[in-house]
Image (cartoon, rainbow, N blue to C red; front, side, top):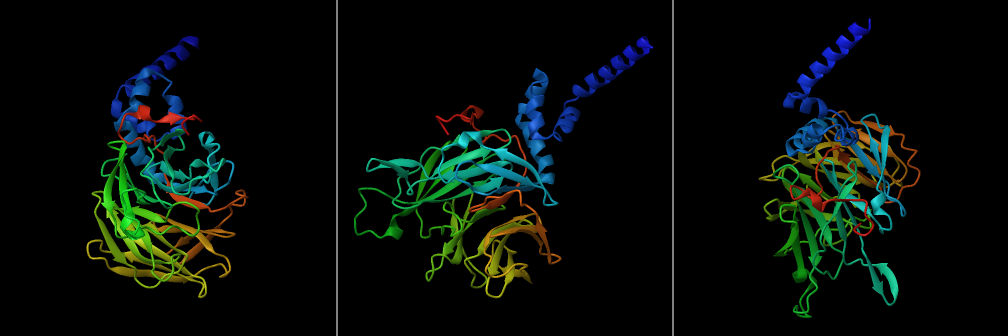
Length: 399
C-alpha cells in the first residue's frame, strides 16, 4: 500500500512539474488567483516570483480581473481611511484599511482605474504659529489598496486658490497623466491681471515622473459641492471630462470641459439645464450625464453618442425611489448600471429596464462625503511603468 501511495504522489508531482514549466499554462492559472493570494505565491519559489512580478503577467492578470469588477466605496471619516468592496449583489465582500494614511487631513478618493486609486488631501502649513490646512494646495497620491503601496507625487506649482485635478489613463496599460488646474501665484504677474488670466494647467506624467506647465486655460473645472476636495470628473475612451460652472450659479454645471491624453482642450454644451445634483459617468463606454431633479423627483440620463460631433441622446427618464428632501451625494456607473448614494440610502439602477435595487450597506454606519467607484484588483505599480522602487509601503515619513 505504501509503495502505491508513493508512486501516486510521485506521478502527481511529476505532472505538476510539467505544467509549472509551461509558462502560458501557469500564468493562465495564477492570473485567476486573487491579488492578495498572488502576493503570498511570490514566496513559493524564485520562478513564481519572477513570473508574478513580470509586466506581462501583471497585464494578463488585469485583463482577467476586469471581467469581475466590483464597487469600491469610501465613506469619508476623519481618523481612518477605510474602503469597502461591494459585489454585484450589493454585499460587502471585503474592507481595506490604509495604515500609511494616518494623520492626513480630509483624505478622499477622486478616481479609480485598473486597481489604482487617486487620493488627495490638503497639506498642513504653519500660519501665525498654528498648524492649519493649506487649502491652496493638494497632496496627490496614487495608491494600490490591495498591494498596500502608494506614490506621493511631487508638489505642483503654487496657487492662489484651491486647485482642481483630473486623471487620464493610457494609451498603454499602467500609464497616466494628472491634470492640475491652479491660479498662478507669481510676483511677476501684474496686480491688475484678472484671476481668469492667471488660471493655468500643468500635467504630471507617469512616464517622466514630473510636472510640466502647459499654460493658461480659458476654463476652470468646477469644484464639487458634495466633497471638500476635488471635482467631479470622468475618464472615457482616452478623454477626461469635467463640469464647468454656469455663469449664473457656481454650484450648477453650465457646460463640460474636455481634455485628451495629448493635452488638447475643448468644451461641450450640456443637452439642457441641469441641477446641482448632476454627475458625469462612464456608462457602457460612453460619456453620460446623470441629472437628478429634486422638485420633480426624476432622474434624466443622457448619453453622448458621437464624440467627434457631440450629440446627446436621452437614454431614459425615470422617477427616483426617494423623496426630494433626500439629496443624491454621488453617482457612478459600472458597465450598464449606475450606483447612487443618497443622504440615507444606496441604490443600483438599471437604465435599460428601469429597475431600482436598494442595497443594505447598514454596516457602513458612519459616512460623510461618500464616494464610490468601479474597481478591479490589480498588481499595477503606482508609479506607472517607471522604476517600481519609487513606490513605498507604509512609511509615515513619506506618507
